[in-house]
Amino acid sequence: MARSLQKFQVGESGDGRHLIENARATGDPDCAIAVELFVAEEQNHARMLAHLLNAGGVGTKRSHWSDTVFVHLRRLMGLRLELMVLTIAEVVALRYYRALADGGRDSVLIDVAERILDDERHHVPFQGRRLRIGFHATPAPARKVMRELWRLMAVAVIVVVAVDHGPALRACGVSRREFMADTVLIFCGVLDTVFVPDRRTS
Image 1 (cartoon, one colour):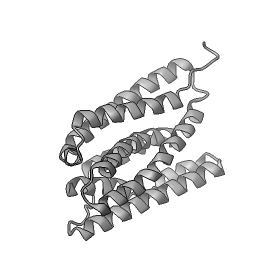
Image 2: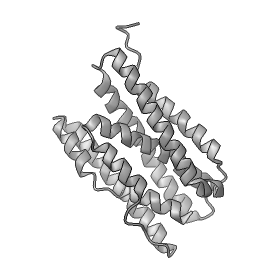
Image 3: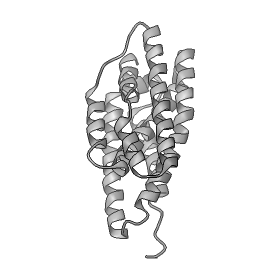
């Protein structure tokens, strides 16, 4: 469990500078403020997890390969791609922290998981709305391609997380298969939110 938490703590601990810069570049002050609040909440998650790990005498990690890959993917292009990659991570976090909250054996762990989960429930809808706006003017054929590529990327990430964090999930009573099925289902809901059918082509 400790190793799993360490990896998620690394993922929550970024400074979000690149994301904030991209949000400000849109010229939409509401978007910029919302992203700044999102980054602040993620950093608070990192602090809570760090306190939890330190209290258990485990400590935190400085880095992990999965976080490095995510950061590089996010920074390949602009805000839209960065939000797409982030949304995958947030959807994974929804199911992961739900597992900890439901099946954790430590009251402090459960409390931290529930606090983080409460924030994540708001993050995913926000990102979905921003992406829906971002894809609104995209031609229907391109939207279909992007939807499928995004889905494939999400499935790949979900499988990797399920394999990597399998022992922690099992300790909470969640099998790898259950985690993957539930997380894919959540992500499909995000896809439906972002890629609303274009009435102009129906």
